Length: 590
Image (cartoon, rainbow, N blue to C red; front, side, top):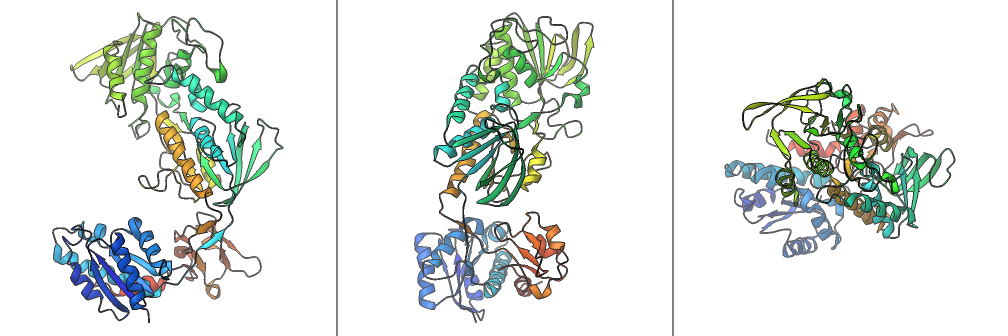
């Protein structure tokens, strides 16, 4: 027989305002294996935790159920509180009677109370069958791998290396800098990008704790968090053999983004009209590249040139550009012809590019067709207003209906919905603000790392609010536009966040692995391999001698896919066994 204590939290009025907490404690206290049941106003407070500790000692409890908020909030809190007085960590469970009961049934207090009683009863049944488990302790390799040498990858690498941990930085291109190296300037501060990026590249190349491998790609990853074996191939700053391997503890994915192909936007003349370009191509023109500015000075580090003084030439015939039309949301927010998402940066870089065009061609005119303007950020809205008011950029609210070649001009037909009038512009150049698309290597990298991607091809975070820089594969973190469209400030912030997660991992002498992982009942296993195929983390294999399925506990993420796949019910999740689930179901009033 177990000796279980039940502690029902009022959570102020969040629970007690709807649920009769005293009745819940009274009803659950009648369970034959519950020897103590009580309530308290705030169980998560220090006095509340002390109440739990005192009750464990006084009543010799070997299991605890705290009926309160979500386990994501305070399960660790109460497990630590109980462990201080000898309770096994994994014999403490939480019953969620706030989010799943009082908040969802606030207008039905009687029914909410009955539901709360049943929720707590099910968790009591679970604790009855919970095993006393101990965490696994695993060795930890304190070296990080950063995939991608753009601003996100470099920032993560520097943050980790500055904490005195070695970093291997792998970049597929022959030089560092990523897409930021192709920019003519940054919004809010035109002249910041070249110097900022040059200094960042110099810091990375000169850092004693960073090994830079350019022109190199990751070809295989084996192992698990803290103990990855990574194989890379290609040349770099140092001469590599055809393939070299590294022992790695954590991985930061910073593969960046690629431009949406113009050829997929034929309705805007993309890929058909030479004088219809995308934003990144226009950045090169502003920077002074091919068909760029009239006066071009020698390039600096990483392809940056000194800012040209005057003029801009169009790609088709080299004529000077006098009128340019920017088309925002060209392929964005358009699930039928393009992508369903907003790239977040287009409104701002269009304002920047339009102003830079007016600087170079003071007598020129810039038009911007827009649907909405997304300028959420410090100083962002003021920046767009500056484009309109100080640089005389003409913003037209409406969609472009047609773009076509008209003799030596590019005709743009659209509508201004604010005035209700059609608009026709004979432009020298059209710039399409196309979506930021996932890097073309993203899917291949995701498959190599065994991490997920979303429906748009960007890497999937573990939780959009609570774990935004972690992937669902332990030890693999996300930084920058690899996870989704974002601008430079947000990219740098996320890169540092990913580095902080790596440093938190490396701060341990050894890794502590949760023991609630899959296990195999040997006498039931027929070695059919169904669980091996079902496991998305590569944690299952068939033992060559015993001929049963085995589990690599370090790789297992207790998702339960193997449990569903096993025809003999040989696969189980510790403390989430079939016996427990059925016992929990039996106490519910169907």
